[in-house]
Amino acid sequence: MEEDGDVVVTPGEVLGKSSDLKAGAGAYVSPQDHAVYASLTGFRRILSPPPDAPDQRPTVEVTGHKAHGPVPEPGSIVTARVTRVMARMASADIMCVGTKSVREKFSGIIRQQDVRATEIDKVDMHLSFHAGDIVRALVVQQWFQLVGQRCNAHRQGKLSKERLPRLEDDEMK
Image (cartoon, rainbow, N blue to C red; front, side, top):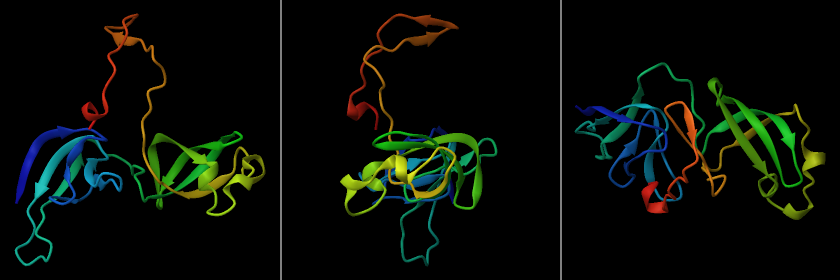
């Protein structure tokens, strides 16, 4: 049985708690806060479990309003091309999630502390990676960062010089 087929959600939007819902297509469970998040823009659907299923939590899924390619999410194995190498990290453009190529552009960062499990301080990023290298990596986390205290808002085709209000952590969930 389907419910909520007309509610539109966007990537990163909280769909519920993993204790109450199972993540289906277009959704994933965050290992940090155990919440279920949308990984696509589309319509939220909550599917009731079959009566004989051992796990009686409903499944939440997001069906895209357009054809979407795969989206990297925590736990995904990705194939990426290294674009830039710095002292403590390397930037990469993600080309495939699993065995499927991505349609949109996704970027990732390979951090020095994530290259290997031991002797992290001895990792030389310039010896480990070069621009153009193809790497296979595990997505550890997704995060968004405010890049400056002063940002300009884009309104009606013009840039405004007004200061944007700061979002608190509880407003972003």
